[in-house]
Amino acid sequence: MFRYNVRGENIEVTEAIRNYVEKKVGKLERYFTDVPDATAYVNLKVYTEKTAKVEVTIPLPYLVLRAEETSPDLYASIDLVVDKLERQIRKFKTKINRKARETGVPERDVEVLVNAEDSEESELEIVRTKRLSLKPMGSEEAVLQMNMLGHNFFIFEDAETNGTSIVYRRKDGKYGLIETD
Image 1: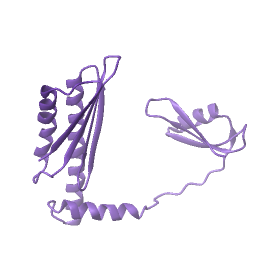
Image 2: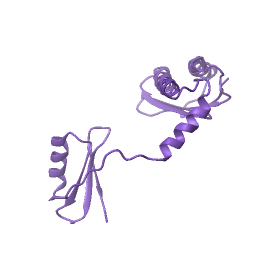
Image 3: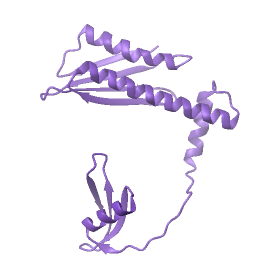
Image 4: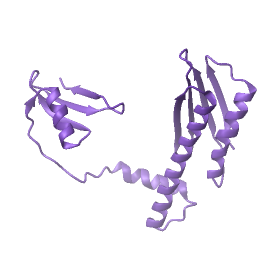
């Protein structure tokens, strides 16, 4: 069963809010056959522009569940965070079930299976190598090249500094530039 550590910033955590958080986050327990002994850390923040941010972190022995959501309504933010956490759990369980079918290990041996996955990931297998010659150009041209290729990043030689630089597409749709010394 989960224990709850509910903390509020710029908001008093009332009994009603605490009960709502425990009720909603508690629904995640149905995804586990043996409910892990874990603490759900819930951080509630209310900003001056009338928005509420909810962050939930649940460290488990084989997985860390974490999600955050911001919306104008505190209760809606809690619901959205729980939805995100449910998706993470379902994705993880699907991954474990697929791995169990491939290796023939029963899915109840989740912790052993997860440790096996960790060792596989630590061997970092490179599946493709690509060679390229860097062409001197400006960052704007590099962004155009990146978009033309349909990639999320592009490596180029900066015409101004003669150093290697990287442009990349950020999650917010804007672009970033990494310059080397």
